[in-house]
Amino acid sequence: MTQSDPKMTVRMPNPVRLTPSQVMAGGSLPQAVLPAAPASLHFYVFAEDRQVYGPATIDVLKEWVAQGLVSVETWIYDEAPNCWRLARQIKELKEDLPVPTQIQEVLASDLTIGQLRGIRIFSDMDDHQLAEILSKLTKVTFDALKPVVQKGEHGGSMFLLLVGEAIITTKVNGALKTLSTLREGDFFGESTLIEPGPRPYDVSTTKSCTFLRLKYGDFQKMLVQQSDIAARLLTALVRHMSYINLATNERFAQAKAMVRGSLSQTGQIVVPPIMLKRGR
Image 1 (cartoon, rainbow, N blue to C red):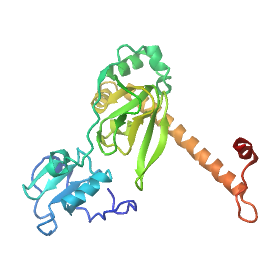
Image 2 (image 1 turned 45 degrees about the horizontal axis):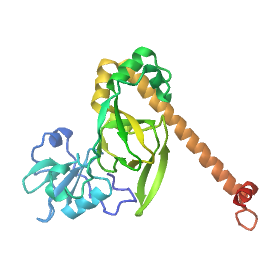
Image 3 (image 1 turned 180 degrees about the vertical axis):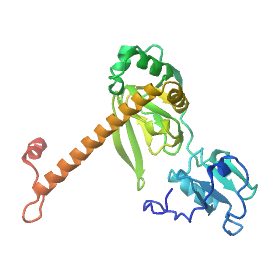
Image 4 (image 1 turned 60 degrees about the vertical axis):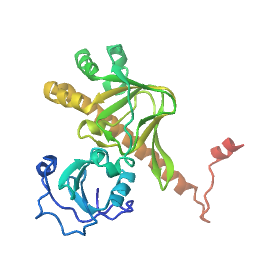
């Protein structure tokens, strides 16, 4: 949550600064820290930037939920009982919070080391490293046209697409916009291995899909017990994301150059001949 986000329809007040220990202890908010507020304003939100925003009415909280700024796992201070609760524990919000997708998962024990190495981010790892990673993975399947995760729901795992196709979408001004298409070997949710939080987008299948899932807790254990393997995995993830970003920037630069080159002296866009041929 930030005060300067131009997409927000609700203006955020100045944050009330607290230490994380004050918040996570689940105790009361010290009265010396609370700004004076009318009796109708009851709620304060501990946001992802580790600052507290408020006071806010229940209607404002619902707007923040709709914008994806409050998830089921967001800590909220309620003045009435003088305590911190998770958003999913506040009954007035239950109908507005995203319902977590029900996932049926099984161990990925039928997957071989060779199959795992065939996936790009695992291609440079040896058998021992792959065996350790394989022991942490589970396998989940979805039918075509089904949600995998929903924007705003709490995320604490990375998904890697083994078979099928899926799309990442979000709503912009009420219209559904496709951000990218996931194909075999692609993944999402890698940031939640470091810090779980609300999903910033929706992911749904276009075909029947099988995903490999690595949970936050299992990855944290790997960081402690097999730090070299965790480091190799992180390096592979960062390398892949850097490649994607570079390719995206190159495509953008090419598109911009094409548009500039197609402008005639009259300011009209000249359609490239290849596009004219395709249109026939």
